[in-house]
Amino acid sequence: MSLSLIARSISESPTLKLNETADKLRQKGEPVIHLGGGEPKSKAPIDALVASAGLLNSGEVRYTPADGIGPLKKAVVRYTEEFYGKLISPDNVMCSSGAKQAIMVAMQAVLNPQDEVIYPAPYWVSYPEMAKLCGAVGVAVKADNGGFQPTLADIEEKVGAYTKMVILNSPNNPSGYAYSREFIADVVQFCEKRSLYLIMDDIYHRLLFGNNKPISAYEFAKDHSENSKLIIVNGVSKMYAMTGFRIGWAVANKKLIEAMTNIQGHQTSGPSALLQYAAAAALNGVQSGVESLRLTLENNRNVLIERLKSFDGVKLIPPQGTFYSFPDFSAYEKDSTKLANFLLDKVRVAVVPGKDFGMEGHIRVSYCGTIKDITEGLERIRWALDPNAPNELYIGQRKLVRDWL
Ligand SMILES: Cc1ncc(COP(=O)(O)O)c(C=O)c1O
Image (cartoon, rainbow, N blue to C red):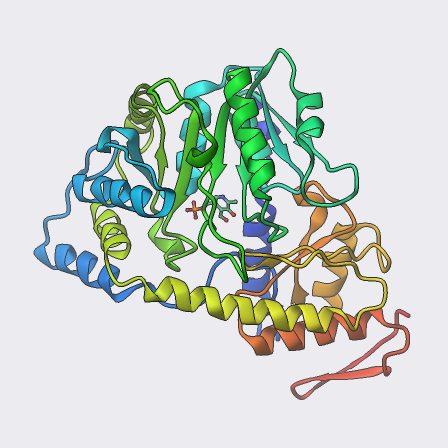
């Protein structure tokens, strides 16, 4: 079969593949604990369900404008004012089928083949592949100290003639790390100075713990004109537990939104009307679900941190938001893919290898599930790796006997 150069360069999403493998094992009756997940377990807001059910019952579910329905764009305008302190117009907004599509279309609107897109490591698995889909090149920037936040100088070092765009995702998937205000301010101002596009991937924006508060990149921008190259991406997937609704958006200058809308118009047209009305209702409706999700996740995170302390040699930079942690397990196994396969194989615990996020030696352990999943999952991992653990472990009625340490 002859496939295009682009098709041959794109790899399967490791996180989607992991979900599939875990599902298949579960269907076979295997007692899998999924600590690799990327979605909250709470229910979608009732306002969202009522709004989409109302339209569904009418039987009149039609095409929508390529940039999204008016009520959702208005809801995004209001949301941007409330949570970013920025007044925008509906012409600055394009709604998409998930934040993923908003990022992809923004890249397609500005990148030429060979252009470079810079992002800190660890990074979301899709950034390098999305760059490739545009014929462009993803460039990861690692912090010198092995941490999760590079310096502006580290970023500057990677900027060259082909650099067109920078992406920041904070709080971050996979580390849960929230970049400091100073770092975000530095990057916003640097991108303005060097005339680079900056995508702020804010999909976990309000899922922050303790004293960490959502940061608005607009606060640091000097250029508030329609020439601004700042692109804010957000959506309802994570904060409103609406991953399957597939609604996200981009906020940017009007010309760029127009170009993005033209692209999206030919790709998929506007997102489903049912789901856009649901998203608008979630944004305009009762917000207590976001806060209760945030508190649940913070509690889960605290339990995970406590449990991880019992692992000798595992290093963890405590997550400040999201529902991911990114511990360094290299004291047990340096090859994270080998480690993840081993854990799924031996103790049926699914985690994602750090290598896929650009940081070998780490694994992504999610805490979006139940406390029981977190504690039992980590207990199984400890049993599999700790030479001093007893030789046998019971998973329900099943007795596991260790024959590998
Ligand atoms: C960092 C990051 N950006 C964007 C997305 C995509 O979000 P959506 O489900 O709205 O497409 C995800 C989803 O996992 C993510 O982790």
